[in-house]
Image (cartoon, rainbow, N blue to C red):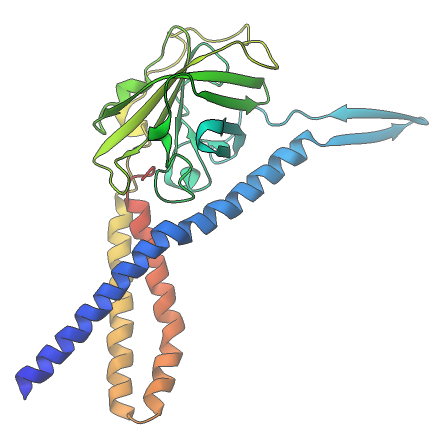
Length: 297
């Protein structure tokens, strides 16, 4: 009798664990995409506001001025411009920075690399399977495919040269270059962070603006440090995920014990009352665990 009860409870626990694993996978693939879609809407609104035409009236005359779309001196997480890759249907706003919070909004510009349109290596990272998966089909690009970056400095056209797969520690792919180059990075293969997919492209004549005359040389752009590569998640988030997971487990066990004690229809009231707090703890645990994973997974 005791053995049967133990086996029954173990089976229920395993069932709950299985459901939680499936829920986390669903959160990764679809829940994060909802967050990214909303963030992209907000970023596009920022760009629209920056490019809107304003009119001021002074002394009976009206002066119309147009603000630049976005300045290149933007803070981390703020909209820097747009990236379009027609061959794979990418049309996203990219932000400054490759921190966890930055790449949740969309592709992110490595702060230590050159600015779009300038001489040097422009580095941009993006998620492969989560948060809208902006770089999900990056492996389908072939030589000659077009990548267009648009910022306050103008519209810059790059053509794909090649794609390589490297280990996560190969931050040298973002080293400065003497000519205009674009380097896109993401995790590889899909649903894994064991390697990095790197797409390299060269700068063509800009479509609507000239390459800045003040473009830095390779010596002007600092080399990327491994800690700044934006390839890893937040290590401290794993402990936080464990704490919230334990809290959720305690809530589950406490509600089960109370429901078992009161019995009858009241147990469902106990489960219903405990569910919101339990789900909130689970969601926070999922988010913390997600922050621990590589930022461009």
